[in-house]
Structures are given as C-alpha cells and as structure tokens.
Length: 188
Image 1 (cartoon, rainbow, N blue to C red):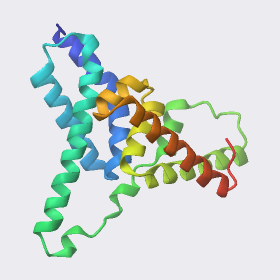
Image 2 (cartoon, rainbow, N blue to C red):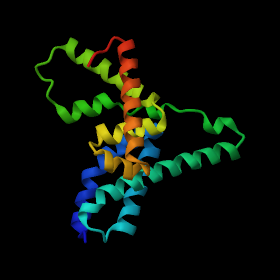
Image 3 (cartoon, helix red, strand yellow):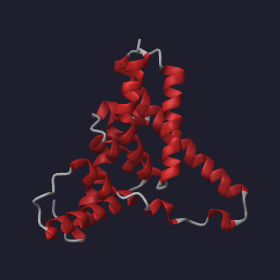
C-alpha cells in the first residue's frame, strides 16, 4: 500500500519525463500537460492503494491510454466540426524546445566552444524532428525503451502488446532514425 507521501513522491519523479513523452506524441504543450494531469489523477484515484512497486507500470499504461483517448477525441472533433478555421495550427507547439530543456537540466557546457554548442543544438533538433516523424507505435516504443529506460517487458505491458512487437517497433524506429540521420550527415 502506497502512502500519500509515497504516491506524491512517485508522481513528482515521473512528471517531467511524462510531460516530455506526451509532447512528442501530441505536439502541443497544453494538451500534453492535460494528458499528464489526467493520468496522474487517474492513478491517484483508482490505484493509489496499490503497492509502490506497481505504480510505474500502472502509470505508464494510464499515460498511454490517456494519450490514445486524446487522439480519439481529436478525430471525433475533426469529424464533427466543418469549420476548418477552428483547427488551424498554431505556433504554440514551437514553444517547446528540447535543446533548452536539456541545456537547463545539464548546465555542463561552461567550457565548451560556441561551435560545439551550435553543432550539438543542430544535431538535437535533427534528432527531435526525426523522432516526431516516426509512426506512432514506433515512436511510443522507442521513447519508452530509450527515453524512459523501461525494459522490453515493461514496455510491452504499458503498450498492451507482446514483447516481440516492442522489439520490432524499436528495431524499426532505430533503423529509420539511423538512416534519416545518416542522410543528413549525422553520425552518433
């Protein structure tokens, strides 16, 4: 049984990564924030009584389901409303900058040359753009495995698929990213 403070500590520990993951999926800061908040509320309301060790997997599954629900709602909205001006893209999704987030959290580029910093920034922007171009399931598997550092079994449980599917999605994502980055002259 998770105590209130253990549940609160867990939610604090996953909040930032869950937000970043949601940004990659929905490409809208406010929507990503709503998805993360809904996921946290559902975890607290329905599974707060579970042991602390079960919370990470439950949260990942809830987050995935909330993201899918968001996409379903968007699809229904787009089908119901014919006024296309309501759905014009805004520049709000450009406010999120992975490089700024990484720089703020690392703070270790004090002695680095401006050229190295600029090269790294360009590389990160290229990687971010290519990750966003991946098909949804590949992007989800890739982010869980390599961003969230979940193992294959955890990722499979969170995605609701087999471990073999996770391996396939990850392999295809890595292959696609590798080819796209090589085509841009980027070697990691």
